[in-house]
Image (cartoon, rainbow, N blue to C red):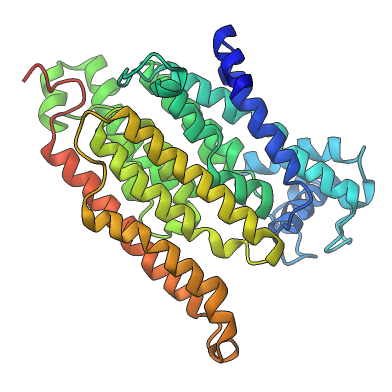
Length: 398
């Protein structure tokens, strides 16, 4: 807290938050990593040692290159740094190759490329006003949003333990969103197009971008405002693309959860209703990621990190909206508290039963079904809010 106070006085609190989470990421370097670690090592080898014409046909390893071209070139660039760490990791025939230098390079490559995510968060925070409820730094919307994004529990465990490059990709998406907030529509559209060429799964978000750009740029730039309004009534950026992003991720929410949660954090500091949806979505979605880390050493890490993030999220948003109605009703409170007994049952009780060998899938089944209920509920609650509540910024006028 003393360091945070000093940073606040000097105006460097954002840098302090970014540095702090970077140090935490470094501490996670020795932890468990999934087969995605070998997937990306193989892609480094493919792009480094083979001609472009063979990148998408090489099948020595089962982990063939199946991402769009920009990500292949991203791996190609990384491979020219990787050769200074361990040349053997770039041999296509070294299937399942691993070494301490390979580990360090791949872990640090994720940490280094997260710089784009940090910059994008900074740009998004400049676009957010929100409620001002106190003079303390920790009560300001920009500070709360920065913590919710930079210290994102989901990104920490998926990227820096499980191993992926989602932070870098989310950075592109957030930067695109920031440019839309800033009315720099062409830049926002361009960045999103670049994102699609890095990872095709973001195609889920394309309809939301298309509708928003038609309403806010294409029609307004060439035709009277009334024409656009009649086709897309009461559609602002906060009330349009972000809920659509959330809805487009409903299917396969465990894999895509981070994308909708990151976007919805931009709404959580603006309205109490959005904060409520965010807390339900992020708490349930984060817990749904627990099965990704199934090794014993990571059990206390994931529990502790999630508890810290969840407690901060709830307490900070309750403080921000303390003059309004409670963020949860009794049913929502009961549901979220149910995650505790579910974790105890799956991690501690079930392994002691005779069902462990005969029905090993039961913990995963229970987790998936329970979390699916919460994610679906959050999705419907958000859309009811969009349809019933006045658009952001228009409440007082009406």
